[in-house]
Length: 357
Ligand code: DNO
Image (cartoon, rainbow, N blue to C red):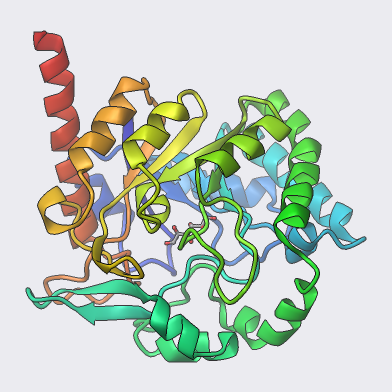
């Protein structure tokens, strides 16, 4: 595996490449062109400039998170082909710049959903949290307003204010889209992009829906092993794979994370590893990465990745806000650096214990 960190780009991220370079064991970044909109074509020049900037800091681009999918593609409206054409061109331009991993999601309307961006924990840190009761008590259009004051002035991925302003139209757009339709539209999209992925060896790594169940009545399909297997078999190509995100699949306590990892051998192209602390099955908060601080056994997760021979990029995921840092919720430097170091420590121990046998 390669340890990486997510970086939103100069002007968007409070964390610098120089800081990331100094986190022990981190060699790559997972980045994006944060000011592009879903459906827009990424020029090779802009990708090249981003790559040069990252490389000048002594790092490399290990993958893109995300090239976002236009709603027309998810809904399957007649104009979807023009957005898929743009997506294909973007993939080609990434391939030409020697970038071979793309993380994306197929969630309707909202990307990840949290009801709090700064829940206070006993140690004084603040974390992202989710309560189903809160979701059940508000309207989708109130969602953004209810959390935006805790965003520390940054634009959250998937929660761009322009998008949120059109929320009612978006819901209207999805009114006839159910799970079956969403699967069908995902299949159409994947079939169209696979040739360019094969030509440039680009691994597509779909991100799970977070939380892993329908929110506000919208369909959510990338939520458990049977659905991932369906997605992979409907377009059976090794480039059609997944981002294994422990914090997203883990929202559903019925998902056995190490077992899922073992079942997905060969098709996990990217891993997000973090912990959650459950207060009840429908109320959880994002704890520190350490197993003892949350509900998951991170050692077992890392061991499952080791056992399947995972050799792709991995990144610590959302961190707590600690030591008075002001940053994008979940994406500060300090706790993610602690997370990376902890995951690296687990990995080293696993590798060495295998060598000793
Ligand atoms: C949140 C992230 C998601 C993820 C996208 C992938 O912090 O995990 O926004 O990047 O769903 O497309």
